[in-house]
Length: 133
Image 1 (tube, rainbow, N blue to C red):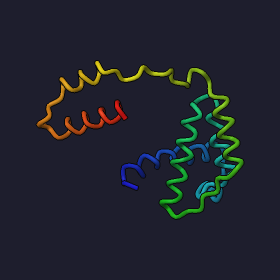
Image 2 (image 1 turned 180 degrees about the horizontal axis):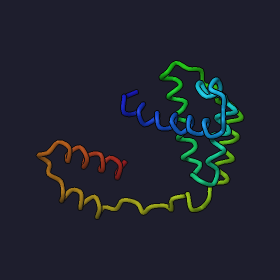
Image 3 (image 1 turned 90 degrees about the vertical axis):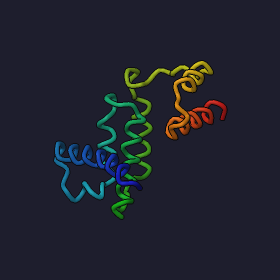
Image 4 (image 1 turned 120 degrees about the vertical axis):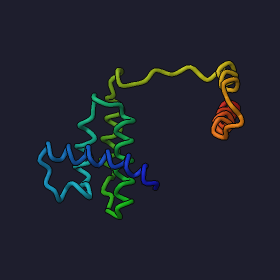
């Protein structure tokens, strides 16, 4: 993993450690994180964040454990808790569907691009691939 990716994943570790401190979790259960600690940490976000946020945090923690060569203790209980957080996500935490990209938008991107700039050329090429598949 790239250093910036691991730094972003480190935020999830910081949140976990903050949670552990607030809840008085003994150090030997924190890292590598015990499954019950992971479950409690995940459940603590119920109603406050979307289920996808909880899943992203757990994914980040799993990658961090792998990068540190630490045992990952997440298992079936954690999956059940993640499913529960998904089901209990408040409507205010969910994003409404966004309108699709239109050919008019693609044309506006084309008109505003400077194709002598490699970045503009790559951005437009990527937009075309996404638009047409």
